[in-house]
Length: 319
Image (cartoon, rainbow, N blue to C red):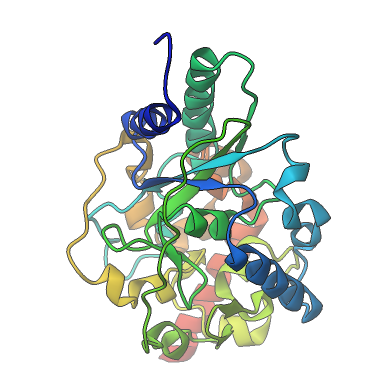
């Protein structure tokens, strides 16, 4: 432990600790943030009032609108990105799975690594309190990541970084230490509307606004009904778990991107070659084995079979 850190030194070393844990990019925001935070909060209210959250009622949690309710005395936020892009692709004709679900459960990975950083900070600043937030916490996570400068919120509602594209999950370490903030990110989507134009269900109703009721990823992950809506099955393609179309088409993801070597994001053996027939034959034990320590466990066994059946049905109609 260093005897005395200046705030500037502590801020820089905290970022270094985050990079040691495999996070990049990293940035700092200060409470209460810029005026943009109030605009993002107002946008959330409009989104909720339009019922675009579908059955995701947790999005309406009041605590999401005020970061101070998550940690008393919070002064700063360390925002981090974990690159999950791996330069591999599924075998042609097999089922498609959103890239964030290829490896280990990112909630646990990000949480564990941020907790190590929090313990380091507490050691260097005895009495400092901190709290880790992943995307299950009632926090405007993308807005605070944007405020910390690690990326901007794109028209597809994903966080985009100029070097890494949008293939990253984000996490936050809230703390009571007054750290030196970074400059907020500058939106750089320009006039591009490719994500809106290529969404097969028109779920991106306008720039930055996604209607979950029309989103393939919402339905094959969150929808608990025994069958999927006809407008979803008509456009589902091969997507059995999530959907990456609006990211795949994004120009920021078209250039050469760093392929992660992080062992926690490497695809599980079955991910890149899962056939419809195999998915339909999954029993509960197979589901448990394949999805052990996976973020995709949210898709229950019967939902995997439901989704695979929808893909199969669509393929048969195409011939």
